[in-house]
Image 1 (tube, one colour):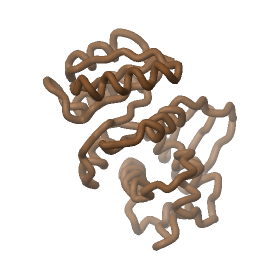
Image 2 (cartoon, helix red, strand yellow):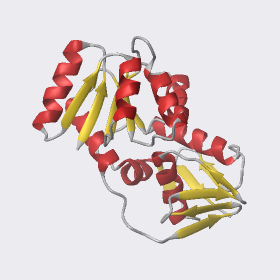
Image 3 (cartoon, helix red, strand yellow):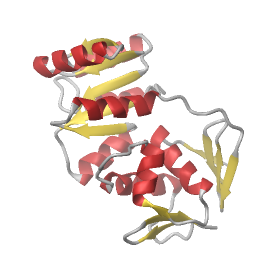
Image 4 (tube, helix red, strand yellow):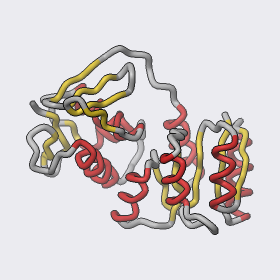
Length: 221
């Protein structure tokens, strides 16, 4: 598996490169936003690890430009930013996940494995009001218009639709969508739900994707 690490701090870059190579990954490193953008487009990678604060172009700008060019390689932000606004901006730019600095290498490794895990083959299709989700083609439509979702947004919507009519608890969603089975800040789930609702043209009061306060979420027709 090939990973591109875009990180301008030499010490962090050396540490991550060495650790990931010991786990069997092939790691290339770019130390500026423009260099990382060019390298990500020049050859195929299985995953991109992108620092938020980079010289030349920020990690956010790199992500936005890659997604604008239809490059869908999974991307994880490495960031010291921790506000909800920053998180939303990163997810809306097309990032698949983010991890806050400082972080444990073991947690980063688990997040990488989740992004690289192949999706199971399926030909299932789910409907929720005007929303149609096709697992086989990995497409979501609202009426006749296709809605572009990130990999994690798609997985979140799929999980809720698979359990339509059932209240999905926050920790259960994290365990099944993020495949994380240790203590985790489930606040990230709210960010993804807000982004998902926005893309689907739904509000918090919409009847299709409802918030069950203090418990989780439920998809209802």
